[in-house]
Image 1 (cartoon, helix red, strand yellow):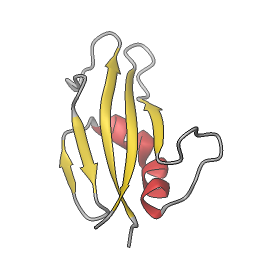
Image 2 (tube, one colour):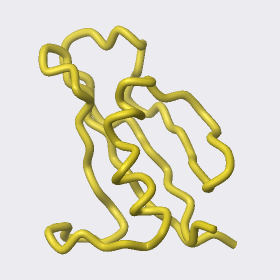
Image 3 (tube, rainbow, N blue to C red):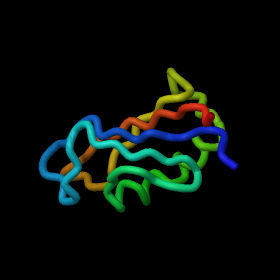
Image 4 (cartoon, rainbow, N blue to C red):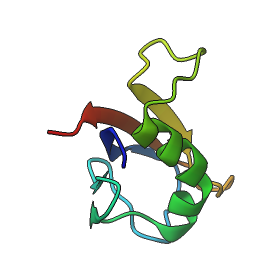
Length: 89
């Protein structure tokens, strides 16, 4: 079972997001369910990082071990996300 819930928040949209993501949109992952809205292409590109974050793995290059950035794969219209993990109750 995961040790953390991960909240993914849209931080910035350059151009036009075809999935309609807007700054402030959030999705929460608790290891079993997802609440909120997230582009399927962005989700697919962040799955490895999302699972690692849920399990408590650390990335040594992060300034804060509980916060990471992720950019969607649409190079012409990039959407920047923040991934923040929080301990599960």
